[in-house]
Image (spheres, rainbow, N blue to C red):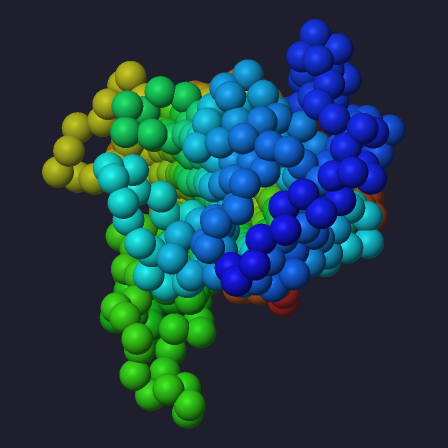
Length: 550
């Protein structure tokens, strides 16, 4: 900075914008993470006007040097203008909240974070309505002391981004936004481009409202710490679009999706898959598209980011979808939980280059879940279906329970797949349900379509006392099937891609319709909706037959 004018407006505005006594702080500053900040102009505030290489301010608690502007106490600061190659440092006491109102700001710091909060107090970035704000850094940071800061915007306490304006953050060094505690987005349009990670926090991150767009070389949103305590993500509103070289969203604790819309692409998408002609490229993840050589620059300036995984959502303890809309297109696993995974609402559309869903225990109670493409649909140790509508389309197994039921391993009776309601439709290239455990069904509709010469239900035992089970394909001879329900078993050629229907004699509306992806020559239908004294017409393309349930 060539010149410093920190108190130019002090005589005009200081009286009106002095610091309020802590005991008389407005509600927006005593509880900043949940407060309404739209009335900030009715409260005392200071002004910081950036003029490329200088700053004009009426704040007595602001100091400036050749490369740094320091705010030393809490309050509201209205910031505008352009600041080049300088850092805004917040060094307020731990109990103070600093609210930065961004009104058309363009900030750039070449050797470190552009906005750095050293203390543990909350920081609010309020994007004024209708304004465009840009914050960028350089590729090489200058480190002094033991603290290593890797983000363009970094806070030692909570960080809230809100308002009706826009914020563009470009991280050439590593990460874009970081909070040592909570990070909350409750408004505005936030666009992030990051060499490594997009948004990171230690304890929690919540997207409540607004629009978030992230393009990054590694993880879009990462929450947690080395001790793996906390680390939770909540998507409760707004809209998010993430394009990541590695994982989309990771949390050492839990991930909950309750509202809003979220679109995530990881590792180049599901076309980079672990099977087929492109399998040799699978697992080569990380980096932004713009890291590729161009005509202007035929060589990369530094080694690109390399990621070990490219999952959509990864939770260390719990992953729950209770509402909202979630669309994932991932080279790796789309939904991954090392603990439980629960779907109790919302709309989920998955495309996976490998497995669509992996969990220790998966529970489907409500909502709509569609797997458009994947190598395997669901891999879990325990699976419970009690509601909702689930549709799986896979190249190999649709459902894989406990590693599958192979001839060289004994079944684990402690594992089971339980169906008590809902609709589950599986179209697979190999076994539709490969269960190293037991199958129980008391209600609901399960439609299983296997690959040719594969089994729709491969399990040691199956106990069906309610609902409907359609098995398109040959059931294995070793399956011990227990049921008292009406049953139809016929030899009938089902054509791939053509609807298979079951219609009661004299009726025009089919009792059941299912479209297999692979041709099979046998059908088994068990249902409490069948009547033993009624003839049913089964048809697929030109193949037709009639049968009376046993």
